[in-house]
Length: 280
Image 1 (spheres, rainbow, N blue to C red):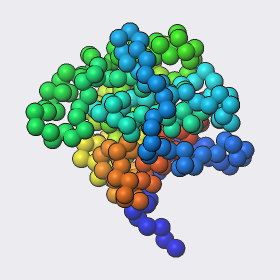
Image 2 (image 1 turned 30 degrees about the horizontal axis):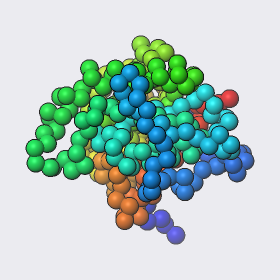
Image 3 (image 1 turned 90 degrees about the horizontal axis):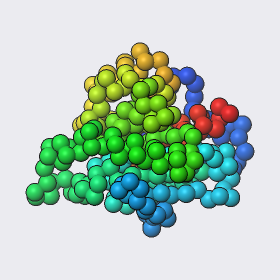
Image 4 (image 1 turned 90 degrees about the vertical axis):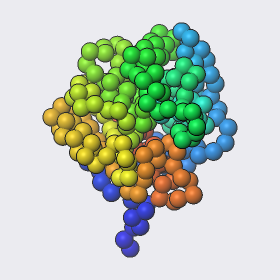
């Protein structure tokens, strides 16, 4: 029987081999969609370092996936709604359940976008002008320093969503050195510039929405062309009948969007596992 198009990732482009799955792995290493938290209370806690609020979610110390991921961390880079959005905290918790110490900094210093971008008085242009690379880069750099010096993390993967997706690319640049990340992932990135894609010095994966009015088909094609030229391992997955933002704020009453959100999350975890665990 042919699968419904409403629950199909319509394209998967791989460079450098397929992502790791359950083949050849013990059952404890395998993942399924049940690991993704869609509702409930977040289980992490907030800490403040260098005047930056960070949400930290830790893996179960006795979890079957935790030991193999010691010394690694996920640096969760949010969309414009920041760490006050429950879905962002729940996804951070989901990465922790996958065995990764996870930290999500407040990229907006207490000034995230409102849940409804159309609320009277909110101006997207002004918001993005306040939260540009000059103000956001130092927040991420400080968080990386916290991970390395206070939590003894040696390898960092960064999933970035919408606004945060751009910074997953920016911190993969060669000139970041110890202040950068090792593996990146971006779901429906926004504001991403071609030069930032071309500057990466490590592997990156992208989860794209076929209905995205920001990271459009044209922008995606251009990004893929640059990734081919760069020569770093990359992966681009296109999810059908999904809008911008689906990987965080999917319409859970739509089975196709819910499935796509879960698969985009598993895409990220398996991408990180490929370089942090499967390569060992």
